[in-house]
Amino acid sequence: MIRTAGLGKTFDGGVAAVKGVDITVEPGEIVGFLGPNGAGKTTTMRMLTTLLRPTSGTATVAGHDLTGEPREVRGRIGYVAQGSGLAPATPLKDDLELQGRLYGLSRREVAARAEEVLARLELTGLDARPAAALSGGQRRRFDIAFALLHDPALLFLDEPTTGLDPQSRAGLWDHIRALRAEHGMTIFLTTHYLDEAGALCDRLVVIDHGVIVAEGTPAELKTGGRTLDDVFLDLTGRAPREEAGR
Ligand SMILES: Nc1ncnc2c1ncn2[C@@H]1O[C@H](COP(=O)(O)OP(=O)(O)OP(=O)(O)O)[C@@H](O)[C@H]1O
Image (cartoon, rainbow, N blue to C red; front, side, top):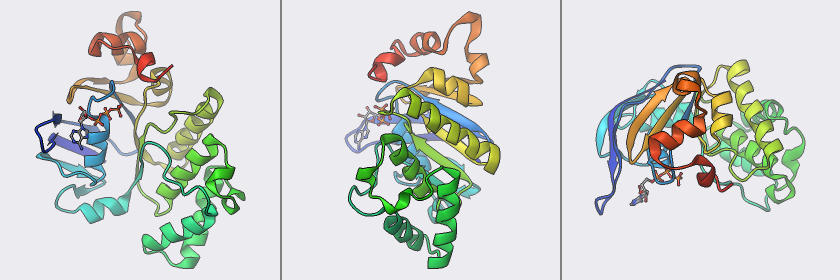
């Protein structure tokens, strides 16, 4: 579903944020993309979602060439960026309709899709409210609902649970798990919560200073009885808890 070869990004001004990474994500996998602040996670995600043009390498995303067919890639992926993009004061159903129309869906199609997606995320009925009248966890679920409106095969989530309390985080992970289990969705996500990533993800990819420094199943990475926090510290020299602001 994702295959990159030597994908890299050097920003104008010379910052080499991502230095030629090879990443593979198979259909139906949940892959966690981990690394300290400034490691290159968001830059990689922004390249894979066509928002940033790579300066080196190639990639196929959801069956299409990333730089040659960006429009086709965009049609098959959903992306939830860091932080919420919801307008605080507009009823969410109005924005859902607008978003659906932007994807080229008819009014009737949007209504049907919105109903299905809201039910999946246990948000039915809440779309009459504006985002300001929702909890943090509900807002994050609406962010995901917006990204699912056009029925993508692949979902990118950049720190979906940051800022949520532990209970809301656990609820959101359950929803993410269900998207894969019940709908076969492929999911590529970043998070600073390593224990949660270890419990959710089939595979983890660790990036530091723009280079992939480890990858494998959580069990493969946790060699010698180490926790993922230990592994992260050994690989990057930094403690993930500080990174998560805890
Ligand atoms: N537009 C830009 N111009 C120049 N440098 C940038 C730009 N965007 C990011 N960078 C730099 O690229 C590097 C990687 O940043 P990136 O946001 O990808 O890291 P990250 O792993 O997502 O970090 P975080 O966990 O803090 O979100 C950092 O050194 C950052 O300062």
